[in-house]
Structure formats: C-alpha cells, structure tokens
Amino acid sequence: MTTVPPVSATAIPLTDPELSATLTARLATVEVRLGDAVAHSDGLADTASRHLVNAGGKRLRPLLALLCAELGDGARPEVVEAAVVVELTHLASLYHDDVMDSAPVRRGAPSAHAVWGNSVAILIGDLLFARAASTVAALGPEAVLIQARTFERLCLGQLHETTGPSENDDPVEHYLEVLADKTASLLSTSARLGAMFGGCDQSVVEVVAEYGEKLGVAFQLADDVLDLASSGEQSGKTPGTDLREKVPTMPALLLRARVSGGKGTAADVAIVDLLDSDLSGDEELASAVAALRAHEVLAETRALAVGWARAAIAELDPLPAGPVKDALVSFAQALADRAA
Image (cartoon, rainbow, N blue to C red; front, side, top):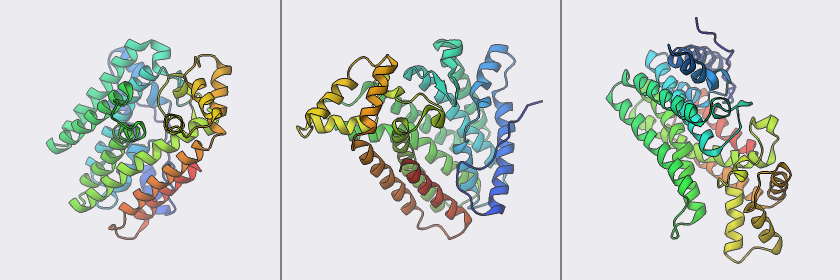
C-alpha cells in the first residue's frame, strides 16, 4: 500500500473554503497516483524514483491543473491523470537538472545524483519521463502531442541554457527565452491540460495557457531573486548554487550588460570579475552572493518579476468572475510579493 504524505492546496492562495477543500481532496488523490506511477519492481529504480516524490514539494503544477479544471468540470477522472502527468514530467526534469547544475540539495534533501551518482540520476529521470508518457497515452493523441511538445521545449530550454547566447543574441532576451522553455512551458501545459480535461471551451483553454506562460517567467525571475535574497532554509537550496556553477541568472546578466555596455562602475567590474572567478569555496561564494544581494540589479530583477506577474493577470480578463479566477489572480500577485 502506498504511503501518502499529507498534502494541502497551499501553493496557490485560496480564499474560498469550498474550493480549497475540493482541491485539497483532489490533490491527495494525485499524491496516491504519483506514488503508484513511480513504483517499480526493481529495488533501486523504486527507491530512487520515490526520492523526490517523498521529499515533498508544493505540487504547484498539478494544483494549477486541478484549479484550471474548475473552470469546467474538475471532477472528471481525466483531470487527476493530467495532473499526475505534469508532476511526473516536472520530477523527471529535476533529476536531470540537478546533474547538469551539480546541485547538492533539492527540496531540503540531498539531490539524487549526490546519493546514487550522475548515471543513476539521469536514468531515473528517463524512467520518470517514460512513466509520464505511458500515463498521458491514456488521455488520447492530443494530450500526447501536447506532452511531446512540452518535453521538446524543456530540452531546448536546457540546451540553450547550457550553450548560452550566440554573438548576435542579446543575453537578457536569450535568458528570457530559456525561462519560457524551461519553466513556463510546463506551467502553461499544466493549465492547458487541466482546462482541457475539465471540458472548458477552447477559448478558456487558450487563456489559461497564456496565463501559465507569463506566470512561468515571473516564477523563475522571482526564484532568481530568492536565490540571492533568501537563506538555504527558506528555499531548500544552497544560496548562490547557480553562481557557483556559472549558470546564468537575471541579476548577474543585468550586471554584465551594464559592464559590457560601458555603463558599469569600477565596483560593477569588480563584481563581474568575482563572478568569473573560482567560487568553489564557501567564502568566495558568500562574497559573490552578498555583492549581488546589495546591488540594484536585484531590485531590477524584482521589477521584471512583478511586470511578468501583472502580464499574467491581464491574460485572465476574459474569464468570468469567481473563486477560480480570484485564485489565479492571487497566485500571480503572490509571486510578485515573493520577489518583493
């Protein structure tokens, strides 16, 4: 029997008690299905596949799918399966991302590659992608196509992050495109599949999908702020991990743009030199985090996150007033507050 950790629909602000109770109950069902979906007869595959499931998390993507389904008939059983698909896809991508980013911690626990090594972590990610594919196959060819295109965008986002911008690309615009593919694509798909399998009109499906796109960019920009401004206990990740691994983030890119454009001060140049140095030591990394934390590029990144969150809210204008729309608006506003 699958052991289900307690879950609650708290990742999205919900002021309507009935909606909150409904989503909490359905999220518990999703949790059971997730445990079943990652179960494997092979002992290592089973243990490693459950590693991030058992570590918890906000279950943001399945919750967004469940919420958007409430614009139609959220009680349809296909809605739960769609929510499972997006969370399996997300979990699989985390196994791969942590290997590529050399992240030692995920959700407050050691990352999978830190426990079993890179090869096992990559293969477990592949297994979870396979389970996502087998789950979505039961939802029909349109859902399979949506899932495949989302998977393609996830891969392209990671590829473009890894290779970086070309000489003719603006690094900031390139980074925003990476965020759209790596983060926004799956949030958009979560909203789309939820509304689609909730039986919503196509116009509603497109509205929430566009909302998810803009929400995803806001979400990652807010995460860039938190990576510098919060403690490891708050985020569940080591502050400055992206800086250490030379992974681009918006504050660093904005600072580099100042320097390359001839608008940087001597202090700005010194910070860029620090970012380009060896940050493997904790003291050096702490210095780099502190320097960016104190710089106004952090406030600029906050402003960008707020702008994308407001753009997401604007996409919701065609939706009818009600608790679902209120929750979607509140969620975007909470992202902006998260970065503030």
